[in-house]
Length: 544
Image (cartoon, rainbow, N blue to C red; front, side, top):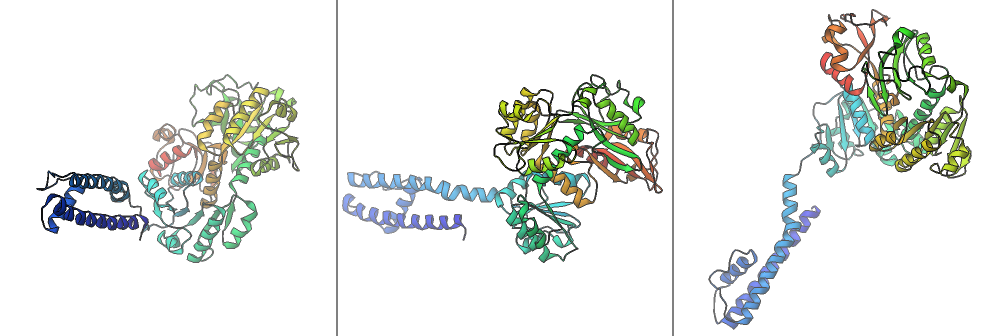
């Protein structure tokens, strides 16, 4: 019996006892003080009428003080019992009647991804799956949380304990393509074991997320095909971004075909492109490379408006041959930057900072700042303190990676770095997605969200597709587009209608990179499509 039902039973039992006691007292008092002999049933009726405030029947008024005091006591008791009944009985009854009933099982769902838990990184994964039209299902243990998710319009959710084999059967895990354990470390290990009890090894891809990398081997032993540490991934991505921003050679490139790549290039202070519009810069004429997108201060635009002005710290998403991208790289890097190669400062040496520093060290000098002295820490102090930042040499640094645990402290540290070294490139970590715009307003040049990095890389692993990089905010996918067949890209107005760019076409085993408005899609073509999540979704809805 549930807590509410036990409470209701106790209340009703007490109510019956109180009514009977008052009935006996009223019955005897009427005979003793009022001189009226009446049936017990009539006395019971008067007590019930008094408690329910529906009236006093034919007994009112009473002539004696004693009887009036008894009636006053009954009135007060009745009102008290009513007020007790509202929160203890009536309100829960209405709440239970009106509450949403979340499904506990799913029928007919197959080739889906079962996500055990509902976290920000799980929601990012959901968007990645939606972009590729892959079905998914959240399994949420907490009834209230499941109800909120369901009420918010998320239909692909069931309520149940993912550690229980029966719940996973109800999620039709035997027909799923993958399962993601997205709770705490101990729960995730138990979920993996339950999943393996439902499905034999090899028939289900199981991904488990861990906060403590020391327990990763336990999860593998339990049966996880891949164990993902979001904090390590975030650190590696921060470090990769810092390395790409200071390297002379082309960085962050993803090879599409032989000698044809898509990459992100950061425009530095002093670049001849600064102050030019996208169309006025004539990047295509000057280098042969094409601009697919551009973002600044966290706002990504793909394709960029022709009149969009390129300024310092604009990031261009470009495509071309290696030589073309190298030539464009020369335009984005200033001569002053090339001659003055300072270190990369990493503020914070937890798991994220440690991974970021490890990613940068093979190619760049690293200065690590942390409040606590430890092996690998170069400057001990508060990253929000001016003297600490000056001791770390941020005024000479080419990039500052802020990898602190607290978003509030990260925002303050960003403000401090920009005060000491206004031109230093700040690459910041964010735990909460709501902190991302605040960090950009504080002066950060590049912000990576923990949930975005982990969610997108999990999707890349599950779908065996290459996501350009989690920090790029752009997907690169290969897909067929039946509803484009027989039409030119200009005729279908693909870019204007969806926001994606057709980068290349795979046709008869060859990769066609000279794609233009007059390119016609024929049957059997596989298109290489670049765009944001929303743009890819629009493309899939319209042409796939």
